[in-house]
Length: 378
Image 1 (cartoon, rainbow, N blue to C red):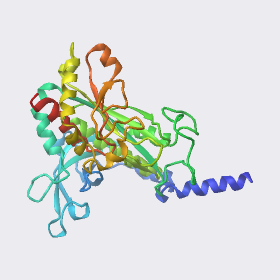
Image 2: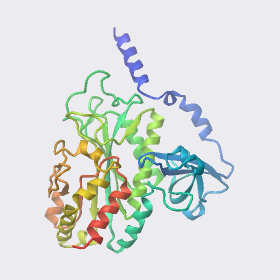
Image 3: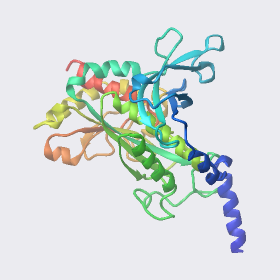
Image 4: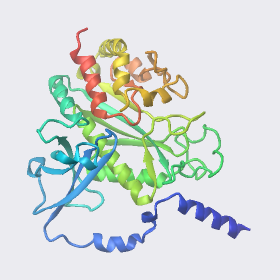
């Protein structure tokens, strides 16, 4: 009987992971250890026409680049990435930030790129271009961000990883920051992603299991200005790439499971030089007042579908505020904006905007916050 149970469990597990993840990795490692003859592999990464998906392709350079300026522009077929018509499909890849490659190792590189259309104007989902313009305007404020990326692990069949094939796991309660095979689902993926980020040079600063089983979070920051979006997008690429090796899927859906289960957000922590200095709380409160006046406009850019995704998540339940109302409070995880308890005590530091959805574009989020808090009139 025990043998039959184990066999059924193994069949169910194999069915929930991709076939490629079951290939012999020792064979792969034999080739990964080969020399490259002084050449360098550079993987170009960009955001596709959905505004959520990431694409990548690799080329060979004659030597290891020492700076982003040494990496040439490239192009791709935009008609295959929802970014152009087939009759005029070439799109430009403009390298903007370089990282080490944790998969093929040194001297190889990962390069985040902006996408330009045939006329050299930014593609519709290239929000980095306009974000960078705003960040240049506010650079004297030394604007720091930290973003908390929640995500959920799924099998390739779309079912939450390690959940029973029929029914549900035990209710939420023991999973947040939990330990043990009955509480933490997918820690191997999480730890490998963390190491990959550190190797690459991502400003990752932590990770933890979240409230819903199979849901996790990693935090990136503090990053100044445009660096926030750059580092988070590449951290997302690394997450999807690590999951690929394990044969599972990471979804950023803000409400992957309906019912009495937590959704997934991308809480955004914000701090200016004035907020970090003595009596900085008054500048935090001023920023919150401005954000309250533009609540609707921020909701529209805090997920890729103009608030429709967040509508499923921001219900006022499961540690969220209502999408229709703006609120703020000290240590209140049910508010739109949370002032951490220590910040309230020290009267300086940062605030947390809890409204952005897990699948938000960090460029549009940070750009909106910078614009509202620092450029709009009082």
